[in-house]
Length: 425
Image 1 (cartoon, one colour):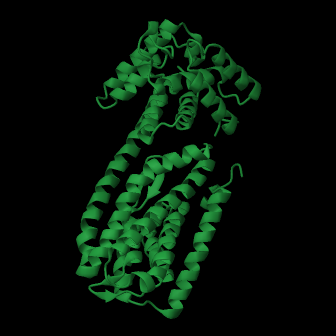
Image 2 (cartoon, helix red, strand yellow):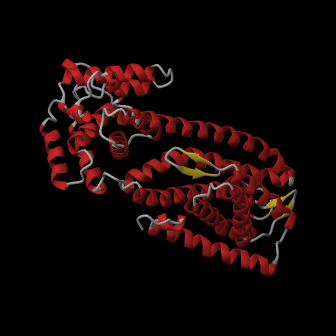
Image 3 (cartoon, one colour):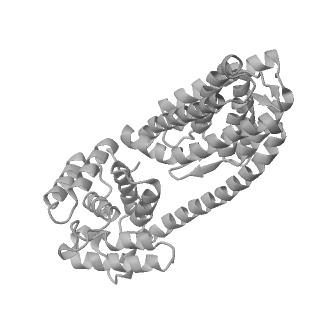
């Protein structure tokens, strides 16, 4: 659809569309059933619905462009896990839980839509399905097994269901992410669990505590627990916004070398994409990947100190001593920020042999990754020719005994095979 406007749904892959359609059908059925039979306890549904809407309104983006809504999810889980409120048994059904959750999420998303910040439908669908999984099992068990009084069995069932929901959500997210970023499914699962485990534990614990507190405190538990959760999420949202703005600034700075004619157009972006993909393949954590992205984007900033630009900006074709001098100058510039010392060290070591200079300390893994990604793009430029790509990788393999880390070269080979054509993506 070159040159034409693409609607949001047209950018989704088949897995995302299937997930959204499945969740959508469930929501339609839940709302239709609830509308036909009416709410069992309208005050209870309204209270939790408002909490879910506020949580969705305050949704935030985690590293790796992961959209989450901790308060909304905790509120939905709390509503799901209720067995009594102030001593009165709750009898709302699983479909009512889905309906209230979906309506609350939709209402919370409307202000974002009004200002052009459309929510990610696949992320919303996953949140609905995770809550539905807990709801259908738990609401079935409440009247026959758990009863209206708190027991240790109740807490055990709550915990097991929340853990299963977190795991199921992580697996679904990994399946989608593996397709989106062209990474191995096992790598995607590991990444999701690293992110989902801490956040899922916090959200699940909040939902369980909310349900237990409502048992003895009644609806007052909503205010007692919602206020600190909201303050925490708003603070985290501001922090996430600062991080996003910081990354945009780094990306803008990385283009200075291109505008000045020191490197080929798109070089920094291509090196960054390949480096992050290789880092993910090798198991780097999200904070490490963020540092790698910063370093890859600014790896050539030292060239600004050159009186005469290197032809094509290809440092791989220069003398090793000159390439290391450029890296050291770039690291010195980055250290002036006062907050990117680790990134500066990655940039400083990017031209060192992978075993270290003169048998010294080997450079960080991130530096070895950038060395391979930079050499690959220097040798190919903007080309997506498979023969040239194979030749570039073979050249690095032949130099692997001294300059390039063989493990990084092989990881890059696997990534390039999946991403071909890499350039222009």
